[in-house]
Image (cartoon, rainbow, N blue to C red; front, side, top):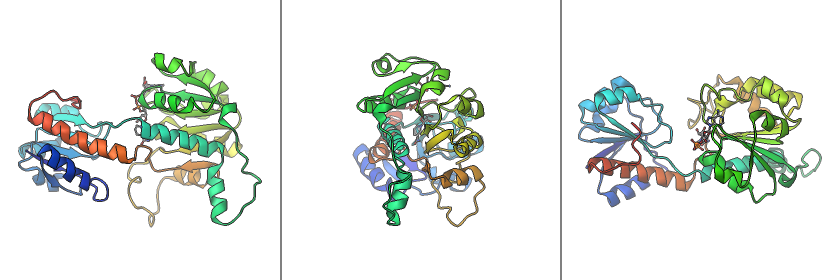
Length: 327
Ligand code: NAI
């Protein structure tokens, strides 16, 4: 069987694809570019294609179908970039390739620690041989209350990771989880705003959760609250966060995701004038750590995603049950 892999990254994916392709007996066409009308012909003879987060429109899916494609797997957890209605109409199966929660959960804990220990300022100082102490005193997690919003795969792992630090943990989710209750106490969102010294977000972005942290909710929070977001940028109103930091209400933030990050992240844009003022302002604060949506990015994650995306193709081709099919 043959699989055409689009958006194949030379520096970390290519070798893994070659290795797993051999192990699974799959012939591969490796293309560094995202799928588009111009390169749809590369899928000729491939029943399955393997993609990243590129938009899969009805037109593009139709062009791929004409080349014989019957299965599209995305090397991501989310699959909202694929027009699933169109795929269904065309008889194309859609699948994903999720990775474990540990990479993001570890990263969230790192951002919490970096925020409460003022690590951005410390690194900036040591880089210029400023070895003073004033302004970089930290706090200890054991004296703090952490509010975890969203106790799914990642939120639960964060709670597990934090349980050795001795902090008090509060949790909020639409659905309570028995495992979580052993280490954290479920409370209302209002109680999280009122009691948490640190708030870490692990809920998906939905109509309900959009801007769940905004002007009104920040006003209810403790003075000096630390906000960590490794979930989705849209959960936080960036303008409100900036105002909160400027007023001192928000003591620090660790942001792996921000609003309107598309078309910025994963590209080299250092010579460009960017049109995301909020990102520029947030990045400039000494108490805000911004990273480019990379909490997931570990050796384990890349390996799992490459392997499982190809395994799904193999199962599909053999007509076997496939745990990764989503539509
Ligand atoms: P999950 O689906 O296992 O858990 C999400 C939890 O959030 C569920 O328990 C759900 O009931 C809860 N939830 C849904 N709406 C909610 C609301 N309005 N308020 C509170 N809780 C709500 O998802 P998982 O894998 O734990 O992912 C969590 C977040 O992390 C997602 O936003 C995902 O997009 C993001 N993520 C970020 C990555 C990064 O690299 N920064 C990588 C992977 C995921």
